[in-house]
Image (spheres, rainbow, N blue to C red):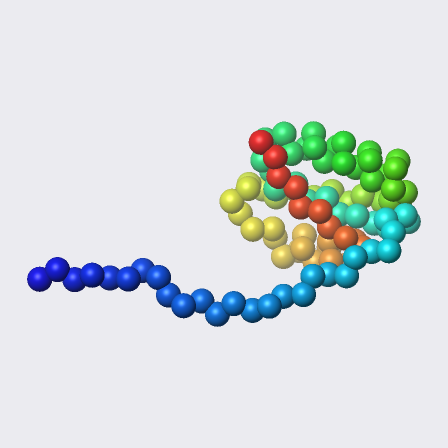
Length: 93
C-alpha cells in the first residue's frame, strides 16, 4: 500500500511593524553587520565612507558573523541593540 504524505503545514503569520525611520542620520551611531560573504567587507567599507562623509554619521560599529550560515551571537545582537541607532546587515558575492 502506498502512503502519500503532505510535507506542508499551515503557518500562522504574524503582522510585524517596521521600526520607525530616523529623522536624520547626522550624529547617529550605525551598526554594520557583515554576514561574512565574499566581498562584503568592500561593500561595507564604501558604505561606511558614504555614511560618515555624506550623511554625518558620528560612529560606525562594525561586526562580522563567523560564517554566513550561522546566527549572530546573542552578545553581538545585544551590543548592536544597545549601542546603535540603526543597523544595516549586508551581504555580497
